[in-house]
Structures are given as structure tokens and as C-alpha cells.
Image 1: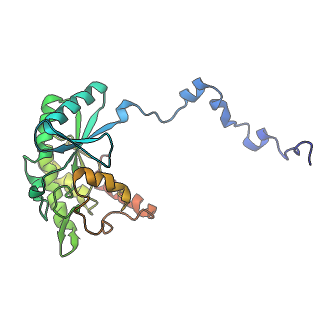
Image 2 (image 1 turned 90 degrees about the vertical axis):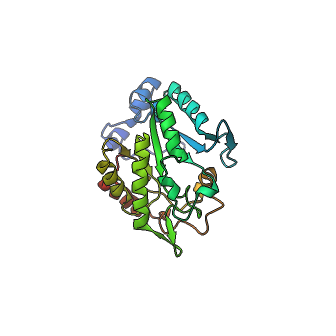
Length: 260
């Protein structure tokens, strides 16, 4: 057994060139001074799941402590968020089954629950940002993010529907459109549609790299699509093992005009 470890062939200063990275970690003040990432209230977005009706909530079993709520209660939550300094809300609908169809056409209704919520929140709390989800899955009878025809999600027709829906949401007062469908070309189409309709200042936050993952289970329960979906979303969501593809998706969305 060695009584002491052998001497290093080179000193630590020789190895590092006297660059000792622990210097800035030695004290609380220096660690705080060079901290690169800080999570504050300014970094938060408050998600709200909206339902029709008045003065009622519904528990979401897969999200303990989170509730769906009617527009009037969503307005109160928006007021609470503003008082806390949270800069933006993200709204998601859970609509009645009799308003869902194979094409998700209710997404185009100016008076659907998302557009109602946007108008009501903006009227009460104009300073808070509103991010609206643009995808067909909460509006389709089959739970897919696009128009389903002969067992296939048809990309281009879906993109046309999404672009029209984005304009409707912007007209209701949305500050940011958030496409979450993963159709090819939808960012560019939505940007073109918004600009043509005079909404050049409405931003796009792309869900650029959505993976075909079981982690979406709680969300699907929240928007009421979990029991509807037959099969999977692997023809338009990304394989979780494909990191290069995920980067290409992100780069494509930026090139098409995504702001976030």
C-alpha cells in the first residue's frame, strides 16, 4: 500500500495554464456574479385550459391541481397572473363533442371558446400577452392534429385550415400564434396569412420539435382527445431517437418565419 500518492508528472498550473475555473466558484457572491441563467417570473407562461359555460371548473385527473375553467374564471386567473408579474398566458380549449368533426372546422368559428377567451382576457387585462395554440386535435372527432382522409393526415389542406385559424385568433386579439401540429410548411403559410391580413406584429412561437411521446398523455386528457385518438401520431411527430431531424425541423421553422 502506498503511503502517499505519486507526484503528478505536471503541476495543475502547468496542465491548466494557470486557468483555474474554480476561482469563480469559491464564494456565493462570485457564483451569483457569473451565473449565466436565471429563472424569474419574466420567464413564465401560465397555461389555461378553457371550457364553455359559466363559473365552473373541471378537474384534470392527469394534472393534479390543474383545472379546466370557463371564460369568466379564466379572466380572473389572467388578472391574478398579471398581479404576479407573469407576462403571458397560453390558452388551450376543451370543446364539446358535438362541435368536433373530421376536419376540425370549429377552429374557424370566430366565437369558439378560445377566441371568446382571448377577447375577454384582452378586455380585462390588456397588458398581458396571449399565446393561442393552433392545431386541429382539440377540434377533430378523431383527435389528430390534421385533417384525416382515408387513414392519412393530409398535410397541405391542414396547413390551409391552420393559416385561416391563425388569422381568426389574431383578429380576436392573440399576441402570439403557437402552431403545435407539426405539419410541413405551416410556419411559412401562417406568416404569409397573418401578414396579408394586416397582422404583421403578431408573432409565431413554433412547437418546432414535438416528439411522438407518451409524455403527451396528460395534455391529451386536458383537451379531451385522449380517448378519441386511434393509432398514433408518428407520421407527423418526430421519432424521439432522431436528434438531427429535430434540429432540421427547428431550422426550417426559423427559416419560414418563426419568432420563437
